Amino acid sequence: MIRRRRECLGCCLRFTTYERIEESPLRVIKKNGERVRFDKARILQGMLRACEKLPVSMKAIEEAATAVEARCQGEYDREVHSSVIGSLVMDELRKLDQVAYVRFASVYREFKDVNQFLEELKPILEKDDGKGSKS
Image (tube, rainbow, N blue to C red):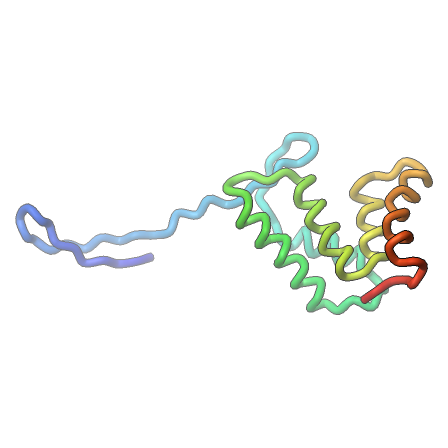
Protein backbone atom coordinates (compact mmCIF):
# COMPACT_ATOMS: atom_id res chain seq x y z
CA MET A 1 0.00 0.00 0.00
CA ILE A 2 1.27 3.45 -0.89
CA ARG A 3 0.45 6.44 1.31
CA ARG A 4 0.44 9.88 -0.32
CA ARG A 5 -0.04 13.37 1.09
CA ARG A 6 -1.89 15.61 -1.34
CA GLU A 7 -3.16 19.14 -1.47
CA CYS A 8 -6.46 20.29 -2.90
CA LEU A 9 -5.84 22.87 -5.61
CA GLY A 10 -9.19 24.56 -4.87
CA CYS A 11 -9.08 25.06 -1.08
CA CYS A 12 -5.38 24.28 -0.36
CA LEU A 13 -6.26 21.74 2.35
CA ARG A 14 -3.93 18.77 2.69
CA PHE A 15 -5.23 15.19 2.84
CA THR A 16 -3.90 11.64 2.74
CA THR A 17 -4.70 9.04 0.10
CA TYR A 18 -3.89 5.34 0.17
CA GLU A 19 -3.19 3.44 -3.03
CA ARG A 20 -2.71 -0.22 -3.68
CA ILE A 21 -1.63 -2.07 -6.78
CA GLU A 22 -4.54 -3.75 -8.44
CA GLU A 23 -3.42 -7.19 -9.54
CA SER A 24 -5.10 -8.99 -12.37
CA PRO A 25 -3.93 -12.59 -12.04
CA LEU A 26 -3.17 -14.45 -15.24
CA ARG A 27 -5.70 -17.17 -16.04
CA VAL A 28 -5.08 -20.32 -18.03
CA ILE A 29 -7.67 -21.51 -20.54
CA LYS A 30 -7.52 -25.31 -20.44
CA LYS A 31 -8.39 -27.66 -23.34
CA ASN A 32 -11.91 -28.18 -22.00
CA GLY A 33 -12.51 -24.41 -21.77
CA GLU A 34 -12.15 -24.25 -18.00
CA ARG A 35 -10.27 -21.22 -16.69
CA VAL A 36 -7.88 -21.63 -13.77
CA ARG A 37 -5.33 -19.40 -12.10
CA PHE A 38 -1.81 -19.55 -13.56
CA ASP A 39 0.38 -21.65 -11.29
CA LYS A 40 4.14 -21.78 -11.78
CA ALA A 41 4.31 -24.78 -9.44
CA ARG A 42 2.37 -26.89 -11.96
CA ILE A 43 4.85 -25.97 -14.70
CA LEU A 44 7.74 -26.82 -12.42
CA GLN A 45 6.11 -30.13 -11.47
CA GLY A 46 5.70 -31.15 -15.12
CA MET A 47 9.28 -30.19 -15.92
CA LEU A 48 10.59 -32.10 -12.91
CA ARG A 49 8.69 -35.19 -14.00
CA ALA A 50 10.14 -34.92 -17.51
CA CYS A 51 13.69 -34.49 -16.14
CA GLU A 52 13.44 -37.30 -13.60
CA LYS A 53 16.61 -39.43 -13.43
CA LEU A 54 18.36 -37.19 -15.97
CA PRO A 55 21.48 -35.10 -15.37
CA VAL A 56 19.60 -31.78 -15.26
CA SER A 57 20.16 -29.53 -12.25
CA MET A 58 17.27 -28.27 -10.16
CA LYS A 59 18.52 -24.74 -10.73
CA ALA A 60 18.29 -25.16 -14.52
CA ILE A 61 14.75 -26.53 -14.23
CA GLU A 62 13.67 -23.66 -11.95
CA GLU A 63 15.20 -21.11 -14.33
CA ALA A 64 13.35 -22.69 -17.25
CA ALA A 65 10.05 -22.59 -15.33
CA THR A 66 10.69 -18.95 -14.43
CA ALA A 67 11.37 -18.18 -18.10
CA VAL A 68 8.04 -19.74 -19.08
CA GLU A 69 6.24 -17.75 -16.39
CA ALA A 70 7.95 -14.50 -17.43
CA ARG A 71 7.00 -14.98 -21.09
CA CYS A 72 3.39 -15.71 -20.17
CA GLN A 73 3.17 -12.71 -17.85
CA GLY A 74 4.90 -10.44 -20.36
CA GLU A 75 3.10 -11.49 -23.53
CA TYR A 76 -0.41 -12.15 -22.24
CA ASP A 77 -2.52 -9.67 -20.34
CA ARG A 78 -5.23 -11.70 -18.65
CA GLU A 79 -5.58 -15.12 -20.23
CA VAL A 80 -3.28 -17.61 -21.93
CA HIS A 81 -4.17 -20.94 -23.53
CA SER A 82 -2.66 -24.06 -21.99
CA SER A 83 -1.38 -25.01 -25.46
CA VAL A 84 0.82 -21.89 -25.47
CA ILE A 85 2.23 -22.79 -22.06
CA GLY A 86 2.88 -26.36 -23.21
CA SER A 87 4.77 -25.11 -26.26
CA LEU A 88 6.86 -22.77 -24.12
CA VAL A 89 7.68 -25.60 -21.72
CA MET A 90 8.70 -27.85 -24.63
CA ASP A 91 10.96 -25.09 -25.99
CA GLU A 92 12.68 -24.76 -22.62
CA LEU A 93 13.03 -28.54 -22.18
CA ARG A 94 14.49 -28.86 -25.67
CA LYS A 95 17.29 -26.51 -24.52
CA LEU A 96 17.86 -28.48 -21.30
CA ASP A 97 17.75 -32.10 -22.38
CA GLN A 98 16.42 -33.90 -25.45
CA VAL A 99 15.17 -36.89 -23.49
CA ALA A 100 13.22 -34.61 -21.13
CA TYR A 101 11.79 -32.83 -24.16
CA VAL A 102 10.60 -36.07 -25.76
CA ARG A 103 9.14 -37.32 -22.46
CA PHE A 104 7.17 -34.12 -21.99
CA ALA A 105 6.08 -34.00 -25.65
CA SER A 106 4.85 -37.60 -25.56
CA VAL A 107 2.52 -36.83 -22.66
CA TYR A 108 1.59 -33.30 -23.69
CA ARG A 109 0.81 -34.13 -27.33
CA GLU A 110 -0.90 -37.40 -26.33
CA PHE A 111 0.79 -39.58 -28.95
CA LYS A 112 -1.56 -42.33 -30.06
CA ASP A 113 0.98 -44.52 -31.82
CA VAL A 114 4.68 -45.03 -32.49
CA ASN A 115 4.53 -43.11 -35.78
CA GLN A 116 3.56 -39.88 -34.01
CA PHE A 117 6.42 -40.44 -31.59
CA LEU A 118 8.88 -41.00 -34.46
CA GLU A 119 7.69 -37.83 -36.21
CA GLU A 120 8.59 -35.88 -33.07
CA LEU A 121 11.99 -37.55 -32.88
CA LYS A 122 12.88 -37.11 -36.54
CA PRO A 123 14.04 -33.44 -36.33
CA ILE A 124 16.10 -34.21 -33.23
CA LEU A 125 17.80 -37.18 -34.83
CA GLU A 126 18.54 -35.29 -38.05
CA LYS A 127 19.94 -32.31 -36.15
CA ASP A 128 21.91 -34.36 -33.62
CA ASP A 129 23.26 -37.10 -35.92
CA GLY A 130 23.07 -39.59 -33.05
CA LYS A 131 25.26 -37.73 -30.52
CA GLY A 132 22.80 -38.39 -27.72
CA SER A 133 21.35 -36.15 -25.02
CA LYS A 134 22.92 -32.84 -24.19
CA SER A 135 22.78 -31.41 -20.72
